[in-house]
Amino acid sequence: MTSTPRHRVRLGWEDRNLGERPDLAPASDGSGGATFTGHCPRCSGAFSASYALAVPGEATKGLFSRKPRDKSPLDVMCECGVNHAGRPDTESKVGCGAWWTVPQP
Ligand SMILES: [Zn+2]
Ligand SMILES: [Zn+2]
Image 1 (cartoon, helix red, strand yellow):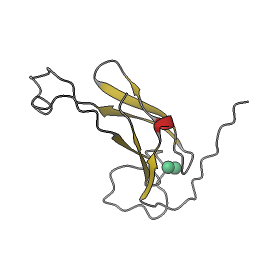
Image 2 (cartoon, protein in one colour; image 1 turned 90 degrees about the vertical axis):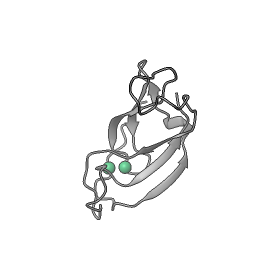
Image 3 (spheres, helix red, strand yellow; image 1 turned 180 degrees about the horizontal axis):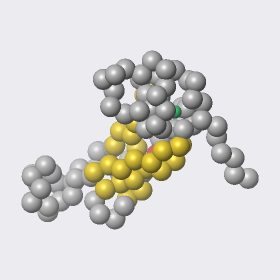
Image 4 (cartoon, helix red, strand yellow; image 1 turned 60 degrees about the vertical axis):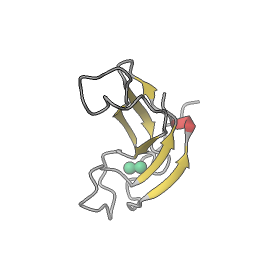
C-alpha cells in the first residue's frame, strides 16, 4: 500500500508555518549534516535537501567553531522545485512556501 501523493503544482505560494513535524525529521548523513528526503506536507512535492549542523570540536571552519553543537530544532522549508504561483522573487527556495520545524537527528 504505497500511494505516492500527487504534487499539487497549482497551489499558490504561501508563507505557511506548519509547526512541529517530527515525523518529517531529516536523517543524519554521518558527516555533521542532515538530509531530508520526502514530500512536502502542504503541496506534496517530493524533494531532498541537506542541512549543515554545528559540530563540536571543529575549530577549523570558523562558522561553528565557538558554538557547541546545539540541539535547537531545524527549520525545513519546501524546496519542491516548482515555482508555485505568487512566489516572491526574494524567496531563495523554490517551493510552495510551507515550512516546518523538526528535531535535529
Ligand atoms: Zn510544498
Ligand atoms: Zn510544490
